[in-house]
Length: 192
Ligand code: APR
Image (cartoon, rainbow, N blue to C red; front, side, top):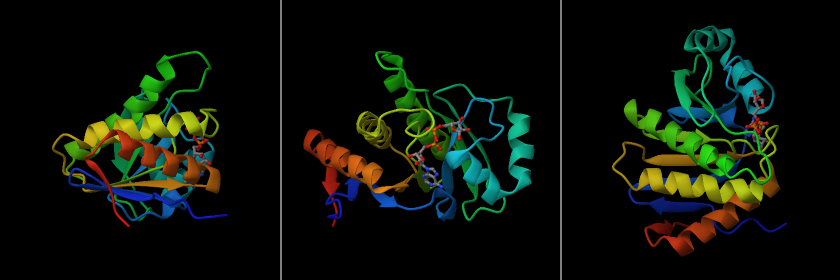
């Protein structure tokens, strides 16, 4: 299988990169958790991050009183390489429900707002909502990249946004969406 051609770009002053890997291994300032509104853990990304961070993460998330869909909240990273975890809650996909795209975009936008509020310079995202929440990745990837592009078009301390994708089809969907984003926005400049 050929390697997707488009995996890195500059958006204004921020580097945006796509790679295949495990979000819990990223050494960015923050990693984003694909959480649920209880913030009390789960499977997938949520389970992997809680396992890697250790029990203190749940102790802290218990104090947060949950998180609305489309919103994001910050905790420390404990045993993770990343200093912080940004818990973002994506929507459960429902075909024909237009609000899911807005809520998914909001989860990405709010995560970058929280990162900027804390002066963080690097953030790693998983593909939010495209696992247990059933959001088709071909529909989610353009929404995710458009939201990140919009958030990075304003001044921000965030200089690196990394999408850490867990399998080839997801990486391919994001790579195609990044190529399409560059077609739409001249400020998205490919970097080899
Ligand atoms: N690193 C990076 N990506 C991962 C990892 C990992 N370690 N594990 C899974 N993924 C990928 C999945 O393959 C999918 O593409 O992350 C994407 C999101 O999948 P989920 O973790 O299922 O998240 P989501 O679809 O947002 O569903 C959230 O699942 O785990 C529960 O508590 C969570 O209720 C919430 C729901």
